[in-house]
Length: 288
Picture 1 (cartoon, helix red, strand yellow):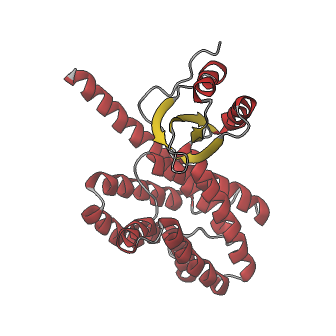
Picture 2 (cartoon, one colour):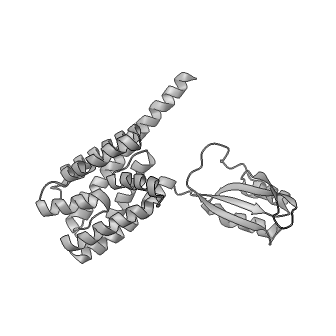
Picture 3 (tube, one colour):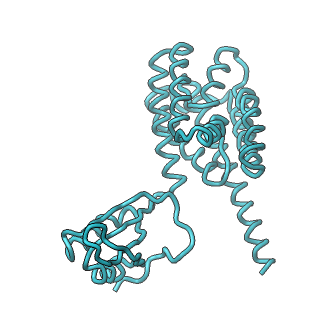
């Protein structure tokens, strides 16, 4: 049993190493072969590094690594050793990649294509690194720590930081570049969500109906998903009832609504986003 656990741990670490490497290389490719030659920047430390590299003519990779060091030290102290090591490795690989590709000609001189493909590759790369336990930008570490103390959502903090960076880019380059950069960031942000959460995004569904037994059976038989009963008591009616709880994929939500409405058109349905599903028996059963 201990040997199996050790093998599983080694496999997990190997996969983490491989995918963080791939993700970091992809970000380096996006920066040097698409965005930087077209004066389009990314948010966070990468955006600051691109502007400094342009102003000083020093290698982008040097700024990417040096500017992230203070954030790595903070991350090591406050967030955790494993996260800091994974992040440091990813940033090192990304910096080396940009240094090696610095003299390679850009894939395209068309800014629209650079924004689309650069944002796509950037989002996939960053998403892989985040999914496997690291990050490629120190501002995310700062955002996590600020969020813990102020309770302001991490996304809002990162957005405020990036608004300042993109505004500065308008002065360093030109306002067209700043606007293109915002679209690049938006595309990358959406791709990060897809990579981190997966295409098969999950939803948790809560259903309240007097026909809970029939609805539960229909969901299991027609959708192939397990359901759970949760005891409840009506606040107004004071009647005892059972709430149906289940987790389905985003693509199954429409069919679930149809199943419930066919049995009880007045049923209460609450659908919430689930960032991840682990354990239990989430795999679909055979549909009768």
